[in-house]
Length: 308
Image (cartoon, rainbow, N blue to C red; front, side, top):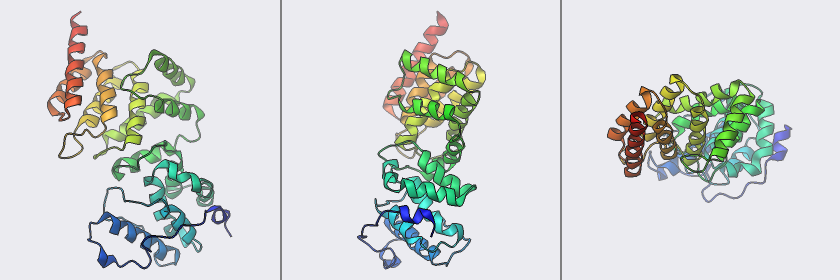
């Protein structure tokens, strides 16, 4: 028997048994019905029905996973038929709050060892590596891009230290002590600055809201990148401000409010044409009143600095 199976906790009973639930009880776009369908698909996969097929949920939004779903999915995988048996557990691990992974952490690490290298193993590595937080991801489009990037950093202690430092920032602008430590971390290893830019690039190539957990990460990473002089970093940070500050949907809430606020503060004090251009555009496109106020204050500060 594979070692990981003995590490899975005892599953709790379900309120609704996914293997007995009738799909007709749910509307096609009902998130709870899609969750049940995912668990049913997993039960079929471990029975050998799907073999090399890939599971595609009927929505790009996160699903309303219950706390016991991951334990149940892992406990059912007692007769794994190739990668199909591990797809739904990977999706659950990616989407539930990081704190929920604690009880399954040993089993998940053992599964990574069993799977070896490859995209599926990287999904488990990324789920285990993502920062802790209370909320699951808000949209799968950003997380599926950033997780492989984060997974590529697991073997570099300097990059992991830099990412950990980003999580210690709790406001739009850091203290001088925080900035000094950030500058020290950036000089430890040559890969750190490029890695931080890679993380920010993931925001620019996705759409939809960013969850609070990754928003906090991007906020700190933005300030790490801000330690780099030059137009290239300014252009990247300008793109981050515009992308993070654009509305996530029909409402006023920005895609990544914390990151947008940080990027605006950074651009206010940064020389060159890109910061003024981005702030002026964001002043026209932002719908959030707090963000608009911050942008106008940043523009005033930037113009004053250039006039002096």
